[in-house]
Length: 83
Image (tube, rainbow, N blue to C red; front, top):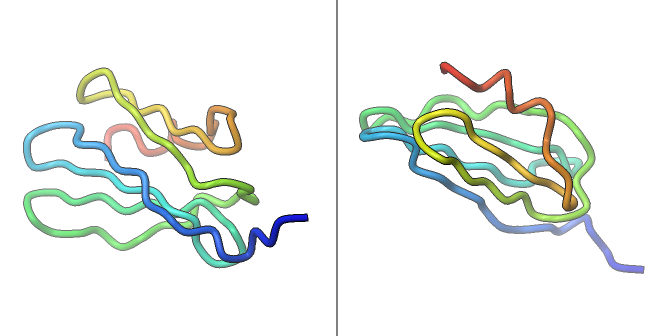
């Protein structure tokens, strides 16, 4: 069995000029998110879950983002739209 307590890595996407979003595995393997807007990082937010792999993220344009974890689409990301 693989020890997943030490998952490391960051997934990031540029959504528009001056906007950058990053996702990573946080404490207790939860999905974490932070956004960079106009050169300032917002506070990191815990999106919950129990990750078994590092997340991946993509976007077609400014909206919407698609975040994947454990080969499945993350459903909670809809709450990030418009922020």
